[in-house]
Image 1 (cartoon, rainbow, N blue to C red):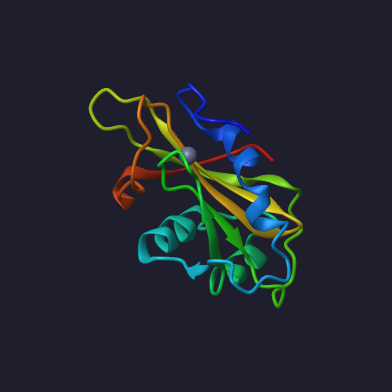
Image 2: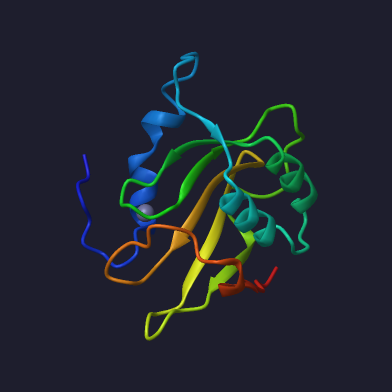
Length: 151
Ligand SMILES: [Zn+2]
C-alpha cells in the first residue's frame, strides 16, 4: 500500500489509491457518491469548453455525473462515475485532449487541470500541482486558461 509519496505532484499516486472504491464495490449500495459541487462543475465545464472529438458526449455526461472519491493527498482532484445512460465518448482511455493551465499565485509554478477518460466516460478530474503542499481547493475560474493540445 503506498503511503505518502514525496513528490511535488501527486499525479502518479492517484491511480494507485483509487481502485478499491471504483471497481471492487460494484453491487454495493452504500458507496458514497454525490453530485458535483458548483466549483467542480465550473472547472469541468471550462475544461470541456473546447472542441475535440468526443467532447459532446463528455458534456452530456457532466449533467448527472457522480463524484465517487477524492484524492487522499488533500488536493481537490476527484474520481467521477458517469451514468451508463449516456453514450460513450469516442475518446481513448487516458487524459482527454484538452486541459487547463492554472495561473500561478506569486512565484508558484504553473499547474494544470487534466481530465481522465475511461471507457469513453468521465473518470477523473485531476489538479496537477507542483507546489510543496497540495492545494486544498480548485483555482478560481479566472486563473484557469484553456491549454491547446496537439491532436
Ligand atoms: Zn492529490
